[in-house]
Structures are given as C-alpha cells and as structure tokens.
Length: 273
Ligand code: MF3
Ligand code: CO
Image (cartoon, rainbow, N blue to C red; front, side, top):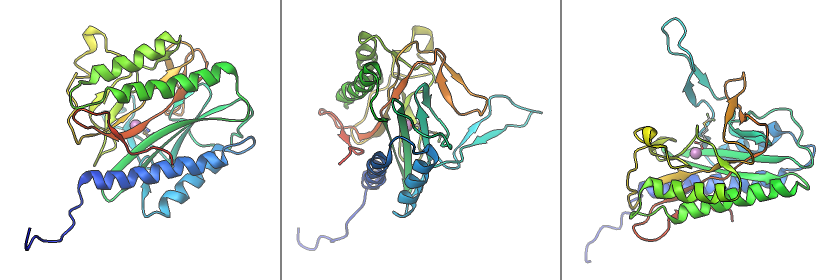
C-alpha cells in the first residue's frame, strides 16, 4: 500500500518470545554445568548472571506468596530469594538453591522464569546427574511425554480439562501420579494468570476452583506436569517453600511456555536449541 507507515509494531507475543528465549538458553547453559559435586547454589548463580547480562531479571526473585497463617490479623508474605528453583530427587518444586552438592543418581528439576520488557517466560527441565536408576529414567521420560501430549491438546478448539486429561492418562497408565496442589497457568504481564491448568481432571466438587475454559488463539500459557514416581501426596518443609513427595520417592517436572493456535498444537517458545 502506498504511503503505509513503516513502523514495526511489537506485540505482547514478541516480548514473551524474547523472555522465553532467555529462559530456554538459561536452561541449556545450566545443563552444561550440571554434574557430580556442583552445588545447586552455584547453578542458581550461573542462571542469574546469564539472565541479568541479557537485560532481564529472574521472575521468581522477590516473588511473594501469602503465608499460610495470618498472625495478629496481618497478612504475612514469604518472599522468594533466589533466581531459580532447584528441586532434587523427592523435591517436587520450589527447592531452594543451597550448598548441596549434586551426587551420582540424583535428578534435578530446574525451574526458571525471566521478566523482560514487561513480560514473563517460564520453563522447567529435569536433569539426570551421572548414571540414574531405570525408574528415574522412566519417570523423566514419562513426564516429558505427558507435557508433549498435553500440549498437543492445547488448541483454540479445546478446553483446559482436555489437556489435563491427556497428561493424567499418560502418567497414570505408566504407574506414576500427578501432583494435585500445583498447576499450570496463563502467563504474560504476570507470571501466573488465568487459566489454571491442572495436570489432572478435577473431581466433581472441585471443578469451580479450576474452570474448564476454552483456550484462545494468541493466548500464552505455561503447562507443567509435576509427576511423582509414587503417590501424589506432598508435604511442605519448615522453610515454607520446599515441596516434597510424602512417600519420599522421586518427582520430575517439565514445563514449557507456549502460544495457543486455533487448530494446530501451540508454538513452544521455550524449546531448547
Ligand atoms: N516456577 C513456578 C511455576 O512454574 C513458580 C515459582 S514461584 C517461586 O509456576 F516463588 F518459587 F518463585
Ligand atoms: Co510455571
């Protein structure tokens, strides 16, 4: 068109895409440093430095959650102090980076969020440390497969529970279980937005908590199965963050931020290159 302005308009997805590229590259970088004897705090520092050097900030650092109890009528908040979550073995999510040295046979779920230009990206990946058991390998494989099977159903034609059901079915037919207390989510200007995306079909009486809404083309969502080798039940440590399996069996976590399309499976923005 003659006289059309040559201004390039950036859309929200362009910004989310940029945050997600940094997320994925951080995971790749951290993966190169995962090994026997490395501490999870060292890995967290590597992640944070990489993110800061890309004019971005780690989404989780400074993240506040309401404290379980209200003391003296005042709402209290817990503030997350690290760039990433480092969840080893029986820790499901929100493990705190520490001086713990990774050992042969460990699995490390690394969860990282990046905020840049007003938008967040979020992804998680479970790494093996040295040789791991056959069961741990299967747990990691099944969790990643469940994520991809869930993603396949995340289209503008489907609703949330179709994704939930696809994830749950694959996990349970392999003898594992999906955590109930934590769910996937919309993402964008906030790290957690509507809709909630459970990794299980909510029982009848709990469906109000997780409305079975249809996905919309163009929407950004983070889908993130947390899969336990044993039972679904989890406990929270006294630090208020660390969530681990009640039976102390291993747990794995894979997460992608994606853009929903009308008919086709979504565009995965946090694919590792
Ligand atoms: N990574 C989590 C998610 O995927 C959120 C972490 S919250 C924090 O939704 F407090 F641990 F940072
Ligand atoms: Co998430």
